[in-house]
Amino acid sequence: MSINIIENELWPILVDTVQSLILYQHHKAYVRDVLLLDKPESAPHDLTLDLGISLGEAMVILYELRQEEENVKGAS
Image (cartoon, rainbow, N blue to C red):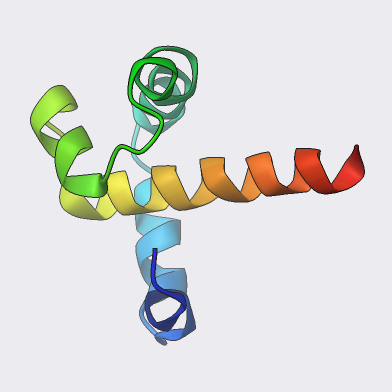
């Protein structure tokens, strides 16, 4: 995901909005535990089609999961 999106002043608003969605944690867990195991290079558009979620939610989920993965690799 482009660093330009994260630096955009609207990014924190999108993240807050997405994280307030009732099914957000479930979608994130499903993407982490199922979808990314099959397709590790999934793009946000892929998640919108596979899960029927908004592009914004897909962007936030992938960003957060990739950040978590980098943190785990950095800690090892």
